[in-house]
Length: 316
Image 1 (spheres, one colour):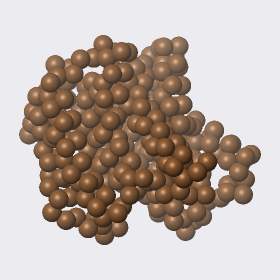
Image 2: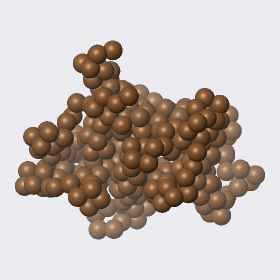
Image 3: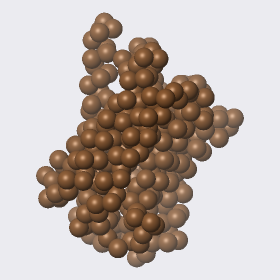
Image 4: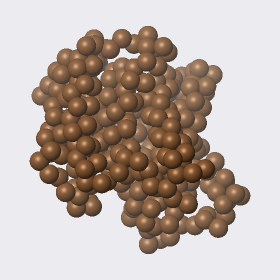
């Protein structure tokens, strides 16, 4: 495969990743009809991590390692990128449409850019700052125009606590993926090993939190056979495919670019939410998507000018 073919191939994988991530919100919402969010998070993380560890042990044993000196970035991924992200995301997802939750999660590119500015000392010139400001303003129409399915979770100013939870998930997710990039690219971990260890730690924290706060009798599942197929879809798509595909693509793309490409995720989530859940999104959703896309396009155009390439770096 030559360089041009590899570029096209990796771009197709980025599009596939966006489709898969959009579907996670729909599968997650369907799963939450039968079990509470912390249990769903903990159970799928632990199951997926054990499967990944088994795979790593039998098929890539030379990289079946964990260095104690790397515990800090791994804990950042486990606590921020796994436990907190999923706890916030799935709690908030209960109270809104899948498409809206996915759009609010699109705050991740803005959070990633801000954290990269602090963490990696990336420069923000005037155009990047304007792009980020426009992107932030893009959330206002959707947040002000609450949909009829918004539950009474309480408000802070004009934001429901469910909306704040999804925004918090986007921030912790950005932190987790920056940590993942550090572990995979600079610390020598394979994507599978980095995901497996962080999922195991984060899943154990989530399951313990579930045990002390959610009702277990003997497990917090209302209908096992209704729960099982959607839980398996969620685990397969989110933990076993998307997480590892995302980690693999971080070897070829920046965390900012993958977050930017994720702007297409709300469209896929909205379509799948309409197909599986009969959800109809308000006009505010589309207004916000247009504004956010314009703002982050301005931001990333400047990255292109700075030769931080959208086209992937080919790595062995």
